Image 1: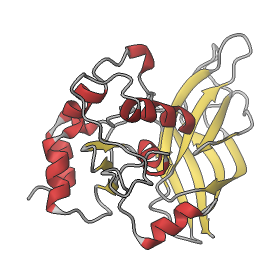
Image 2 (image 1 turned 30 degrees about the vertical axis):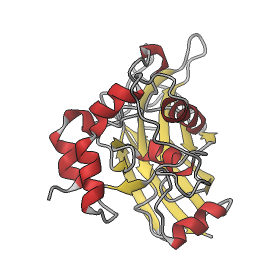
Image 3 (image 1 turned 45 degrees about the vertical axis):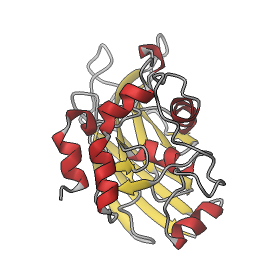
Amino acid sequence: MSTPCEIRDLDPSNQRCADCGAKSPKWASINLGIFICINCAGVHRRGSYMTSIRSLTLDSWTPEQIDKVKSMGNARANAMWAHNLPESERLSKGATYEDRQRFIERKYVEHAWASPDCPSVLAHPADPRSPAQPECTTNEAVLRQQVNAGILTVLLVAGEDLMKADIGGLSDPFVILSLGSSELRSSVIKETLNPTWNQVFNFNVRDRIQALCLRVYDEDFIKSDDFLGDASVSLADLEDGQTRDVTVALENTRSGRLVLRLTLTLL
């Protein structure tokens, strides 16, 4: 029997998130039969209309669940639920939590862009007959009832080898950090490609399935700020109470890294 990762890797359409197009999705919606990124998985799992989410590597799968994603997959699913989706309304991988939530509800609940023969697979989770009922452990159910599952402390240490954005061959970089609906901004470090911030940020954590998203910009007073790259860090790999040093490579750019120190404290 094929593993979830093998099914994803065999089909190019499964190698990008079915909703936002992010590379190498590591989660799946079982009842929808799609592969999705950690950011979209958080919306699917916690939205007003929830779907059954599984990690490709961290969760156990039944043969029936594997058959579901194998028989559907992202290409077939999007041919139904995104049949008439305009290019201008596509979800970007850098979207906010609120944008993802609205897009996913429009796509799967309201059938805003669906084909005429698209099945109705979602129902309100309060309905015990709903096929969209999330399968969860007792601990997951408790976490969903809490306002916060914990606190993430982020020490933004530095940036390395960032892209040049200014005429003089340097940049004035700053970072926007976001977790769920919370968004914080670092200070601007002038005229450098290797900034040092050493700034501390604290976020409330709703769910361990969330990811810390980082977007780097060059501050520009004349025109819009220049995009220098983005990255994300999954909280699923962090242990309670332990501090972890992380260096993440920036994506959607030619070069750049961010150096972080992360501490997750569960409540």
